[in-house]
Every structure is written in structure tokens, then in C-alpha cells.
Image (cartoon, rainbow, N blue to C red; front, side, top):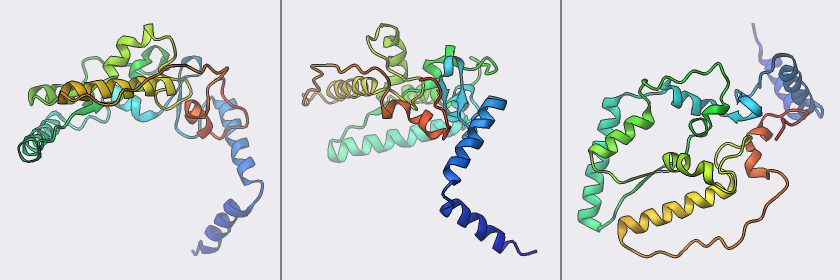
Length: 219
């Protein structure tokens, strides 16, 4: 059975049919209204918070690559760092970015249970870096510490990652960490004003915009 014509017709329809983008949005919207599911694989939590599945997989330990593998990687990295330091006086520092699902556990859907005893890549990498004396800046832990006292949101409910404000905080923290590790004074990051908007801007709603719905989810 030759499906070549069918495949070519389907491809042509997707590319050339003027109503195709609208049809996709209608289909996605109906699926959301009827089944409360997002066709893109994005997970909707409490109060319409959106999460990418990979962050939940990490939090639940589903993508754990194993302690031995992580220790081997840390050992190799330690040797590379020693070589760079001895031959070129180059220092290496590691930065761990945030996990939105970890920082917003209270917004996760009730069906997701987090086993605190289960091994994860995040915790195991931290242990391995400590074992091999590898300097690491853990922004995930730092953002947990400052989130409740932050005057502005560090993470947006419909964004993939940190907000614009959160990104500046991260950049400044990395800057200071490098200064501390190298003993060198770098150019300063100065935030002399804050522009407050009535709603999230494009970078802060990138997950929501990727859903391709007729009606946006409540920001």
C-alpha cells in the first residue's frame, strides 16, 4: 500500500491551507475545554501555573542517570580543571540554574507526589561536586532562600524560567561568585531603576504562548 500521495497531500495542507493554524488552535482549545489537558505536553498546576515536564521528571528522579555516572563526570571535570589551572591559570566554576517545579512545589498539581528520599541528578551532582572540591554556584538553592523576601517575582507562572528581574539577580550573583573565586574585580552590574508593567511581557509568558490556544490561559 503506497501512502506517498496521502503524505504529500497532508504536508501540502499543513503548509498551504490558510485555515490550518486556526484549525490547530481550535483543536487545542477544545481539548483543553473538554479534558483540561494541554496538547503540547505542558503541565498545568494550581492557579494556572505552567510547568515543562522535564522539570517535574528531575524533581521526581525519573531521569536519574545514576550515582556512578555522575561521580565519573565529576572526576573527569576535576582533572580538566586541574590541567587548565596548571597550564593556563584558568579557573572553572559551575552554575546550577533554577528548577521552576522545585521552587514552586506548592503550585504543582495534586497528583504529583515528590519522594524526598528518591535520588535525583540535582542532589547527586551537588554531592559529587563537594566530594571533588569543585566550586559551584547553586542558584536553585539561592532563589529558594530569597524568593519570599524578593520585592518582585523571580519566576513567572506562565514562563519557562526566571523573570527578567530574576535573570538580573542571577547575573549579578554569578558576577559576584566569579569575583570571589578569581580574586579579580569585574565591571559592576548596576540596577538603578525598575520598570513595573501591568502584566507579564513576552519572555515571561513563553510557555503560555507555545500552547497555541484560541484563548490564553489566565496570566
